[in-house]
Length: 102
Length: 100
Image 1 (cartoon, helix red, strand yellow):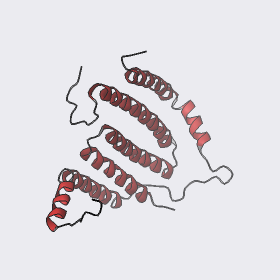
Image 2 (cartoon, one colour):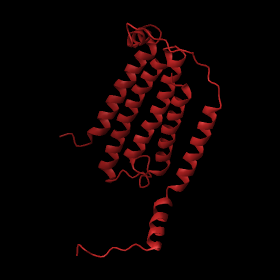
Image 3 (cartoon, one colour):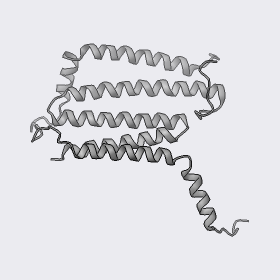
Image 4 (cartoon, chains in turn purple, cyan):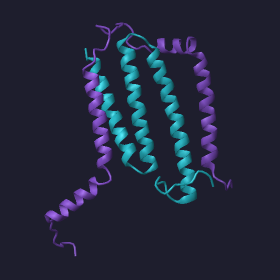
């Protein structure tokens, strides 16, 4: 039973390839077209950028600047984000709890 | 110094993978994973431009975007759990109702 002879004919291979690509080929084509368009657009655009990345030798990280910016310029979106996180937590617990609260 | 086009190309490739999965897969968890891929490609663009323009606003915005992605994943998985409890499947082809 285990050493059953396995033989692939060309028709089997073609059928399996067809079954693999039939539900996927449209998505593959659209994704490949999108990716080619995006890559062509990226590499043929001259992006304005700084010549040299700013580096501070003593302190390599910028997490302190990000924290200061969150609590000065972006404090209102930060508070709104806290409300959004709390409400999504409550909604997720309510939906995942189910009806039988035993 | 790595040119900024390579970051954008990686983000475009990741976004295309997410787009392909979103259009072909029919399982709810796989679709949520592909949405996460697309969001992370956008975050990569934000961080790359922020770093190459010496402006930290993009990185702060990427932080908010990551928090929103966490909210979206939590709500999505909770909805999928409720659907699985009700219909015993999370294949999105078999879910054709909006209320129950």
